[in-house]
Length: 109
Figure 1 (cartoon, rainbow, N blue to C red):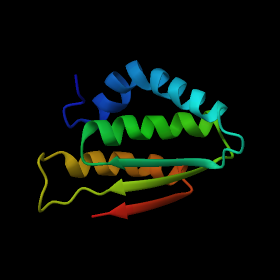
Figure 2: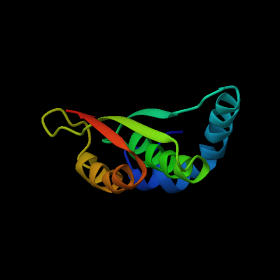
Figure 3: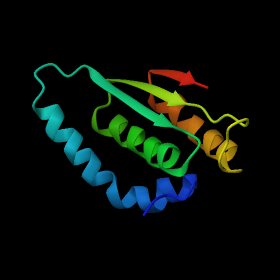
Figure 4: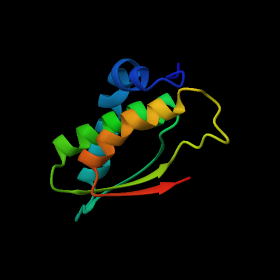
């Protein structure tokens, strides 16, 4: 099941179901690191999973690993090649989390 190009579905419905599993896997990898410096997150903000679940994951990483660096490499929604009419809305909803929970965001158009 996917988020159907819907930020709210990716963040509040589907995301809530799997974010703990994702963070558990990240936690196991982080425990194996001797000098964890931070996280690099790759996502696209046009769809529901990349924007909704991606932002939820960043929020939870900020809570669990507060002072660690978080870099985001984000594919920005582009109206010329958009596959869904809601891509601009997903992007706007995701921007708040990117601003609040990342140290650096590199955007690709």
